Image (tube, rainbow, N blue to C red; front, side):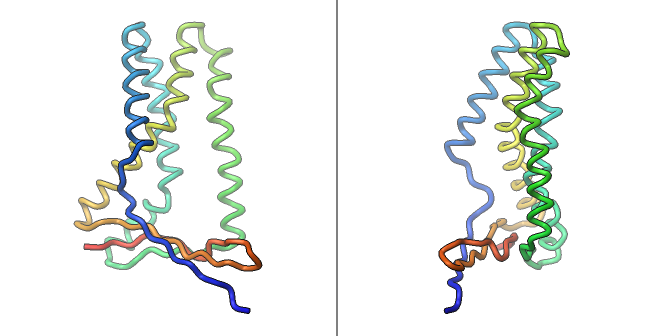
Length: 170
């Protein structure tokens, strides 16, 4: 019996409830930090973490930019070794997001550590917005719309991603 194959494609630039919540959360915490007079530690921790998180989450799109600029689609064949490397990076990065606010409690003085911890907490929502900005910039530079796609294979009632990548539609 041959495995069933499914393909899915969706627009990469989409604004939904998660993005609206991210904006509301960041603006509220920024206003709260400004009123309390601790905007600098909040912004420093927010910016210092949100940019690396965005680069980590959108690294495939950053790699795909050259292929999309040349008019080709960017396709990644999913291999076990690549999945293991990416999972190891995820095992390191995402627990740091949970540990970083706890570390600031011991390293910085009391009011500063609370606002820097708020910045760490809101770094992930800001990375959602920075990712949208990156996609919008790529679409504007390439004069088209970026779509992500997945080819999913079902083998023995389990789903595996066989290929994934990006397409540019003009």
